[in-house]
Image (cartoon, rainbow, N blue to C red; front, side, top):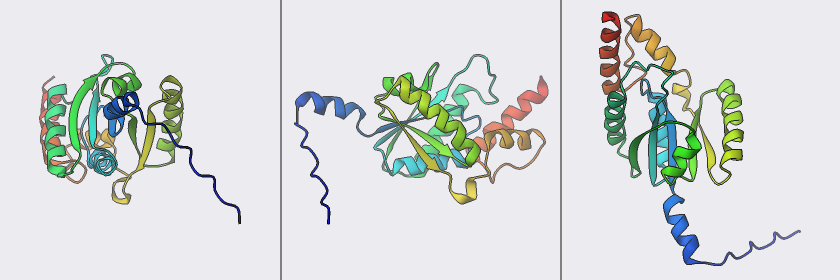
Length: 189
């Protein structure tokens, strides 16, 4: 029987400890969260089991006009994260530009990505490859959607809400209420 080689000992240094303290257990979960859905919360809950701190980073793109304001999304995310009751610390931040730069700014060692299906996987693998080239020190962690949430999509939730449908099966109450206000605002314009 062949024996496995013992792992090499890595020397302990204060510099390594200081660097590790800022990045060891922090992940960044980026998206538009327009609106926040139960699918997003599923990724956050799964990530909370792996990390001590998750920064939920709301991407701000000047070319896109979200249905919910930045402030509404921050409030909805904070409320939803508090309701998760996880031992992980959640923070909410905005960012513009590259997600890997946002991850670096937040001291994250990983970027969380949720996968619903093969289409998500193909897209996310390409993105992970690009991000890995730009920031090899930041890992992408794929978390599969729970079976009952694989069909949930923010785009579909917005479409259902715009047509007057009930979206409470797809998003937390605060998100549903904010989306209802957004639909009313859009009707007035």
